[in-house]
Image (cartoon, rainbow, N blue to C red; front, side):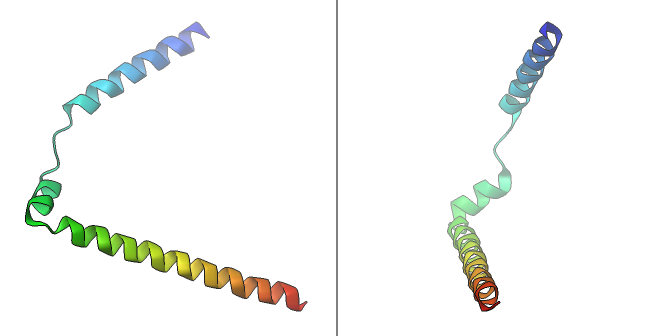
Length: 69
């Protein structure tokens, strides 16, 4: 058990070291500075809303089929 905990602690320490070395993503900076990031966010939201509506319509159809039998 001690060995497992020590390996886990070293793994967490190594992951923190990698996380601190991460630089800012250049593409995101460019999109943010030009204002296009809002277009990306809106497109992602529209896709998620479309998926949710599609899943609800499938659920409604399945309920109708289940109640028919």
